[in-house]
Image (cartoon, rainbow, N blue to C red; front, side, top):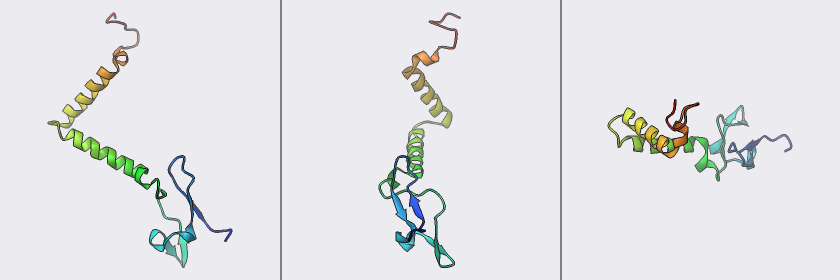
Length: 102
């Protein structure tokens, strides 16, 4: 019907759309016999693996794994900062300072 709700993928740049009535009943809930839009973010099958939640979960898994190689969180953060300073030496000079001159 023309009044049927359309769900859009929440992934930036994706134009996938689904008619609410065409989705399997396992993906939607019903209230008073009518299908209702699911709460939260909705991702199409192509974007689901790269959805915001999945990206964050993978990031936290990587961080937890990397941090597990250090004696404490402080040692891990110090290591990150040292690596960042080595990679960006120009960013270590305070405004007004050049080549160690104050």
